[in-house]
Image (cartoon, rainbow, N blue to C red):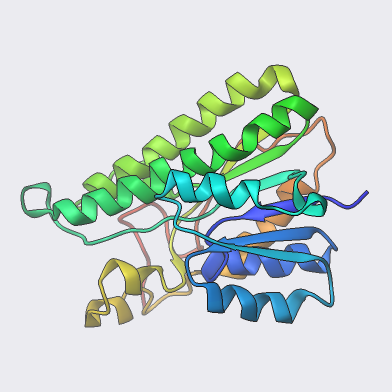
Length: 249
């Protein structure tokens, strides 16, 4: 029987790459994001491979999420795999000069958004006593680096939530895990630095991870037999040893 996966933040980066990877495997897809036009473009590119349904909403809006999930047609209502990928980083400032708006955006999307989407979907998984949830964290959830303060806090929260989910959902046989990348070359840095020239230098001088690398890992995680749950996976590019040590040419 075909599985159905819901992916948040599917319009770019890791979410988009994962959608393409899942489509190759014939997994039915519910693709979510704020940019409706991009969702439609991806749908057109993938609908020859599998069934695609798109939902355009902001993960910060719990009412909008609930409405969107409730609107799913019958053939997409049973969600087997949830990829909580939507996330963002804003600014790289010391705590004393950090922007409150940046802090709100990171906590609202990275933490509360993940919770809101999960809350809308988990009840159907517990009812069926089946499902697989993968939260996309970050190496920033494992260690704090200079000027990373609130972003690191949000990703530490993702790991804590993942561990709490795994404990609470254990009686229902639901798999829960996190995939935590280091430096991945996506539009992430453009968002973080708001188009500033520094965004163009983030991945210079070394080979960063690519979105496809993470999509391949996620694909491997969901392919494991039922008795195997990859609970917590940390992945760096070879040039990166930790959050502050990167070998550049």
